Length: 423
Image 1 (cartoon, rainbow, N blue to C red):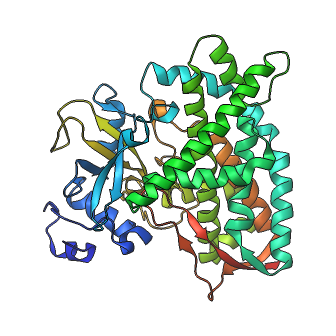
Image 2 (cartoon, helix red, strand yellow):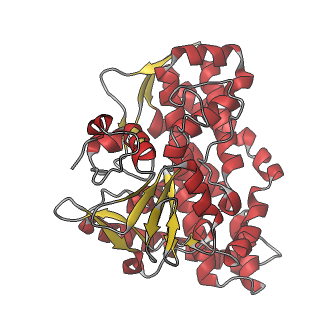
């Protein structure tokens, strides 16, 4: 099996037959692998499976636009078997495919989105800024008073989880267990997960579903006269109006609770790490805070919190030059397309003055564009404004290196010990 460095010996047009996508080196730093795939094999079949990784921007967008051929339903994911080899895990083992909101096809997707969008309308998100800023100030001040600490534990994980709970309409005191459930849920997609762990995740997912089912029942009982603020009330209204079934409303809540907090946790962790590694960028942002939103876009481009999204082929077809059998799963790699040098000059560098800062794919594209993008951008901007305003030194702790979640799907830090000094 080839290692990424071996590809330097191949002609640009030579296809790659076998790469170890689960090699810990490739998971910790996936970008050399993604560049190799984009150059040599933009639609790459994982050996021994019917899973294809798509790394070329044009072919990703083609798959996104061919809704009649490529379904967003999540039916199977990559898993590691007991021998350490990649295999497909069929989500029917969990009961059924995931077909809610981001994983739904039309016309169901439009119904789900219409019910959820009022909860993330611009005015509602803007109303959350004050609470997010107050929490960020409090947590960052606590870190600075101790000359630093673990950014993930103190800031990156709790702030997005509480924001997600508020948007959905869940009790803020439940944020810790919601975070635990969310991290467990996306572990299904890690690729490195073993069969025995999958059973534990199934149990945790059942617990989350029951919790959300109970909260939905409370919203249904409250009715229009005493609504629970948040998306959960909108879904309850949809159930009572016959727009969706109760079970689907719970499935939508599971997707929102699972993805909503973790993706922004990844963004906040990745942003702080890139700042710590680039003091010159810190300085420019302190001098010109209006550039912080552009920095957020560069973080999203360079370190997409979700590296991609799955599709399944409904029929035999072709994508580019590659034959795709019916039933194949495609992982569309946002993180690979985001570093395409033809679209982003100097793609591995932070550039606060790019002409196309929002041209990345980290929030998806088209009808499945992330409904939480506005909230994620607001959280990142506010937290980074407070971090840079309150520090004059921000650097990694050389005695405790950061550690990424071992996953082919999420780009999130488990720990990020930072050293800080007050401004």
